[in-house]
Length: 155
Image (tube, rainbow, N blue to C red; front, side, top):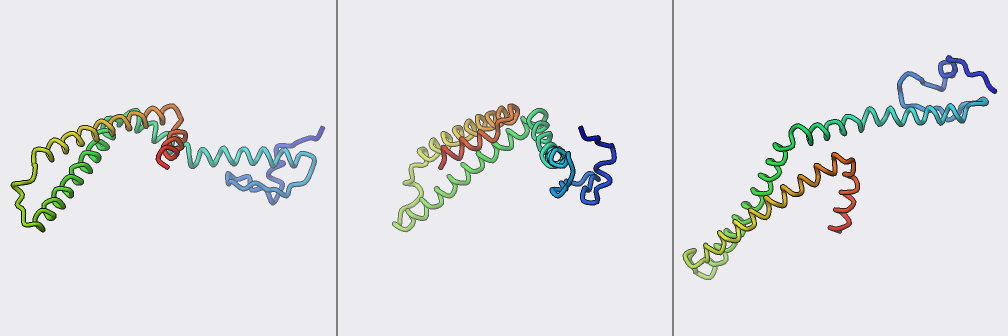
């Protein structure tokens, strides 16, 4: 059994044991493979704590405290996208009819209104459902699987 002193990592000039994520693959000695693997695991965990843990905490905070506001923003974005698209469609239809010399009075405006209202309701409902689904995925830790499912379904 090899004796491991508390200073083993500090005596090695290639082992920067100062909190950096460097792992020395050129160690020598009886415990070098185990020490290298242990340092590798510690570095991976430190990297997780430095880069991913704050993002996870931020997502959890957003989903628990400010969710209603985020949901309303998403619904507002969906609603404005639908309204913008219908305004573009109306403009295109007006220009198309003007090319034939027709006036706007002949356009079935009631049909546009019903269609736009129906699309606005559908967009709001879909945005609400999608935000609830995203919230439950984030809270359960399954956002990666949700993104995989979405890309598999859309592609």
